[in-house]
Image (cartoon, rainbow, N blue to C red):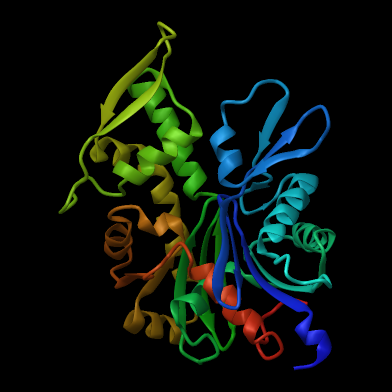
Length: 340
């Protein structure tokens, strides 16, 4: 290892709509919500990640909380840069007298435009990166699951994140067929918020909707091990006072049905455009699922029923993309699919 290599810090970054995960030497060193709190008067960063999330929906007029990524891409360039810079600071060690150069691999949605891709690169460079490459999320997810993406056999990946659901068929180190839709975890939350407003006549925030999704979220109305009913707190829309209601997994399954149907349609569309030889491979291997959305109860069974294929959920679906990005970073010069 040369002197320059010694002073180079390599980071694999899953810059997600909901969460940002950073790995160094294959170890998760940052796992934080993708949110930042800024002082409106000074423009200074007050908090990022978990601390900023605790402020979300509770701030006064002097503070604003921003989720700078929307639908898997950068919606607020300046806030993304500040957030990413803060996360990168968390990875550094004060033991080094000489600041290390940063080399990054960042995962991006497969349906990203050149302008959106440039925004990601610019944010990384403004945050201190000297060398940046990118990898598409379905490819990173497949690597993280343990699939040999350089093999000739075809594999289908469904990566359901916060902002986008990525469906792709991979073979020979490339994406043969892909479909990216803006129906994912955030859309599930909005469905739950709307359901609570219409059925229970109460207003809830994004954080409460997320907790409902985690505790009683379901894609089907007949679970073998159903979760207990969940207590929801919000504001009564008629009286304006705080109230509590209980919800069960069946009504949340009904609330999420339309969004899940969109994901099913995208999966069918990707299968319809898959070359026959790769279709034969997928029939044998089945479909692999990653991302936080794949943890939704019964979603794997629902997709299996729709496609009549086996569906496998990754062992650690929340970290699959990040770990795949880290493996790509280790093989920086040999993987043909890294974007310069």
